[in-house]
View 1 (spheres, rainbow, N blue to C red):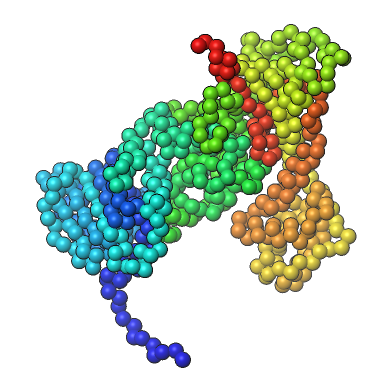
View 2 (tube, rainbow, N blue to C red):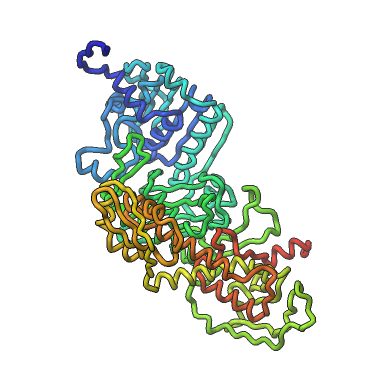
Length: 610
């Protein structure tokens, strides 16, 4: 039997703050995130973070921002008190990082907090303490330069149940380092220092120029990240997306190098994740994860950041437009790959960074082959290339021998070699060797031909009318009423994809035809996947993905096989086709199609110049 109902009563302010803390304060890392955001909003140019026991015993953050006047110190520790929101109009176009007015009082309710600050132009600093029971002491004079220091001790000392959920010191420190890393990536103009138990973990000077920004990225993400990065910067319909994409051939086994910022705020958003994954869908193996550092900028009124108390999530007012912009921008940059030059904006880091294969996650050793970005745009005119081959390979040559370069040296107009060079032979019946302007290019001929064939099949499929294959027996699928409505709403889209689907009452539909290219596919699974995409994303990504998989299989079977001998003219034709083809840097499975050994690499291998 249920007990007698308890009377309705007001909660104590201390309990209210602790409940709010449960939404905002999960671990030391979330405390650091809130306090660093406050420092950035205060105009800090340098932030210092000192820790003990992974931030549980002590987390101190000092900044050189504009500080807090003494008369506002106690107010800063009151709930729903903020200088960043004055009315509904401000809430609908939030431009600051912290704005809810919950962070400081929530943190103070589950720790022993000391707040010390000196306002710009003030004669002295002042300090207030909170005892963990919600009592705020009177301001006391203190020694402190202009700026603010927040000292948080003994996190969750008064909430033992919450403290039990904290992990080991190493784990909590790892989470906190990730927070500092994200802040350092989004604000290179702010100097950051992180110490733990007196040991320096990170000391990053402010960076305002491209070399400084690249040094910071290298310190935070490793040299390999930049060495494989493709720079991008695109703008349309009031949106701007810029940053770095790591080439698909150098993807990762974990999603640990994925950073996406919206108006300077690190977010985890399903719409963004879907758009990025869709852009990589036919250049990346499904078991691998892309790596990227991307910044999306849009008017504050077009994004709602007031969705989650910890501000991890956002909601776009024009979600479909944002999704398509991200998807198409990334897809276009991946299509250009390392064979297309992109002009960076003035002052931006160079997009032509050498692409070096990863070796155990560390910078590659000297002499390692690389893929270097080429000063060539897709679709450039090739009429300038003059090829003149005087003779063919001698008939008596062994099947596995490389054909000798008996042709006169062929060049483009002006004496320059084509971006991927001119073929000089074939190795083991697998690799095409080409002499380029600055060294040796090695091409996996099957992988390259597979990508070329795949892109041609996709183009032909996209240009032609989708052919349907009627089913001998319609497949009846039990669905929900909402899914029936989706079928009725998207009839034109389904027909355009070669699908004939008819509603049969409130909870069933009949699949009468599927795309001819997918003949033999599981019609029910295809439809259910498609309806899931329509329900979540409003598009038919699953059908496109299925068709892409079929086209990739066809391309693989049509590609030249290993140990197939090619003549010099055929090899050069393959190289020129690669230069014309989108996404030619990797095969359909995400593996590289070509690498380069520069003249410097070759000289180093043979100790020339020493």
